[in-house]
Amino acid sequence: MDVLSDILDLLQLRGSLYFRTAFTPPFAVAVPPLGRAARFHLAVQGRCHVLVEDKHEVRLDPGDLILIPNGAAHVLSDRPGRRAAALETVLERAGYCGENVLSYGGEAGEAAVDDEGQTKLICGHLDFAPGAEHPLLRALPPYLLVSAERRARAPWLDELMRLITRQMFAETPGMKASVIRLSEALFIELVRTCAEDDETLRGLLEALGDPRIGRALALMHRSLERDWTLEGIAREAGMSRSRFAERFQALIGCAPMTYLSDLRLQKAMNLLTGSLDPIQRIAGQVGYRSPAAFSRAFTGRYGRSPSDIRRAVA
Image 1 (spheres, rainbow, N blue to C red):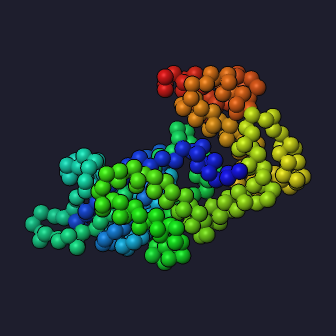
Image 2 (image 1 turned 45 degrees about the horizontal axis):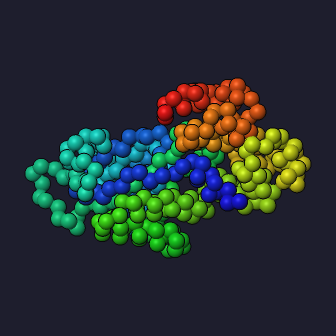
Image 3 (image 1 turned 90 degrees about the vertical axis):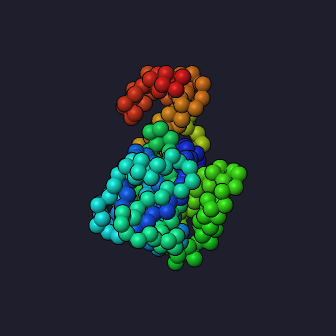
């Protein structure tokens, strides 16, 4: 079983918003935090400074890309230290309604900057399922950066970035749908490529391919309805209970039964919002023998009962 694909299906990674910018120096735009979402900025022309969470300063040169995976607040500017305008204010001043190019920046009285002097970015936004939570998301660093040097070592990633750029500037029929799907693939390739530089993320991806831990993960993902115990999963993995629990914790970042519980509840959330199955049936599908026990666990995890979720999407 391809566990990474199943994880991404579970998290329901979806591209949702794309636009181009033409920022004229001086400019500084404060992008607010936004829950469980991922944003990326791909520099096509000019230089852009990105300040993530007021502590991580990154410079983008043409061809560079930054992914900010956990909806963190950040500032885009032509140089560090500028006072930033809120994104909502920028959109209002620019009269931007979601179509064409977001043009912003410059100061009254200054000589106009020609097209070549502008900073042009492709900006994208990806969403996750309601209540999405997984060790993969927790393992992601504050930002992932792809430089020209990194692109040269990752041909698939490089090609995806080139395809997105060509599509965004071509403005042909179906462009948005194409970019949305390409950006979802881009997220996956970014995670795999940048794992080389992050120990936590690298360990988690190694776990997926580990002959024993990977087998245990595949069994949990494939058979949520089974009455799993720690001893049973360890036995399937061919390890002692203590050694299995220790290695699972080291690679995944949580205990095996915690992982299983979170997995079951995220799957239940997806079924509640995306299917018409009765709540009692959903409880059984994700491994709960008692609907009451399922309701308690779900409410404890999400702060709302399964019935509340079902009514909200009815």
